[in-house]
Image 1: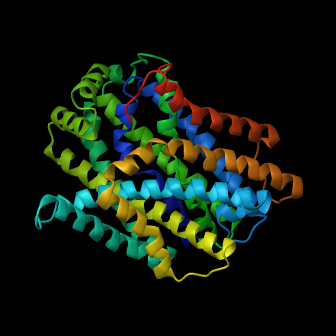
Image 2: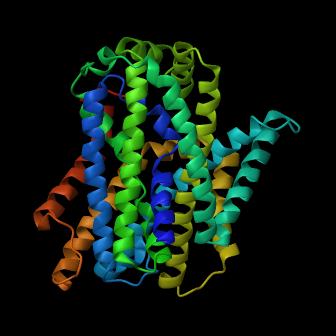
Image 3: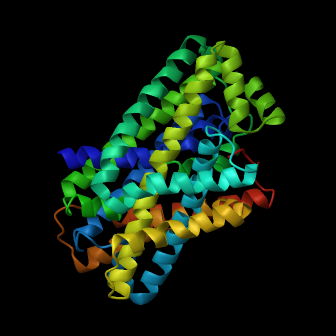
Length: 404
C-alpha cells in the first residue's frame, strides 16, 4: 500500500508540470465548458492507453522496459523504433526541465561572474541536487516526490483560494470563438496527461503487481484531472474571454497570465504562490521524466547489449546529454519539444495498442484485460495518428493556431 501511494503520486507529479500554468492561455478561445469536455475526453483516452501497458506487462518480467516489450513482440526493429522515440522524447523533456530549473536557481542566488556563468552553474547545481535522488534509487525519488507533491498541493490550494472569490458565472459560460480551436488545442492538452514513459519503472518498483499499477495509474491521473479542472475553473472564472485575448496580444506567456491574475485579485501573495508552485511542478516533473529515462537506458544496456551498468554510469548517461544541450544549444531542445507531441502520441497510444493486439493473439486468457476489445485498440491507434497529424495541419494553415 505504501508503494502504491508513492507510485500514484509519482504519476500525478510527472503530469502536473509547470506547463499546467500556461494551459488557460491555450484554452482562452475555447471557454471553460469545452475545455473541461476536452480534458475529460483526453484523460479517459490516455488512462486507457496507459492501462494497455498494464495488460501487456502481464506477459513480461517486472524489470522489462518499453524497448524490451517492443522487442518481445516485434523483434529488434520494434526495440529500435520504440527506444529511439522514447529516448528522444524524454531527453527533450529533461533538457527543458534542466533549463527551467537552472533559471529558477539563477533567480535566487547571487550572480557569480557574468549572467551566463551564473546560469550554467545554476543548471549544473539543479541537475546535481535532484539528479542525485534518481541515482540513489526509486525509493528516494518516491520519498522526495511525496514531500514536494504535498507542498505543491498546498500552494495550489492557496492560489485557488485567492482566486475563487473573483469567479463569475458569465466568464465560465463563454463559448468558443472558433470551434476548430478544439481540434488545434488537442495535442497540447494531450501531452499534459503524459506519464507513460515512467510506467516501466513504476512496474519494476511495484514488483509487477498488476492491481497496484492499475490503482496508481487511475488514481494518479484522476488527481491530475481534478487539479487541471480546478485550475481552469479559477482562471477562466476570474478572467473574461476578452481579457484572455488581450493577454495573448500583449504578453502570450505565463508571466502575462500571472500578472493579470495578480492585478485582478489584488493579492501580491498570488504571484509568490504561483512562482513556488511553478518550481515544485517543474521539479516533480523532472523527477518522473528522469526516472523514466534512467530506467529506459538501463533496459537498453541490459537487454540489448547484455551489459549491467552501475547507477553512477547510468546517471551520467541520463543527465550529461541534457546538460550539454542546456549549456550550448538552448534553442535545440525548444525545437525538439515542438515535435514532442508527435513522439508522445506514438509511444503512448500507437505502441501500446499494437503491443496488446499481438499479446492477445499469443495470450488470449490473460487475467487482466482492458475493456473495449480489439475495436477499441484500433480506434485508439487511429486517434493517436490523427493527433500526430494535427500540428502539421495547423502549420499548413487549415486549422487556427493556439498558444502552448
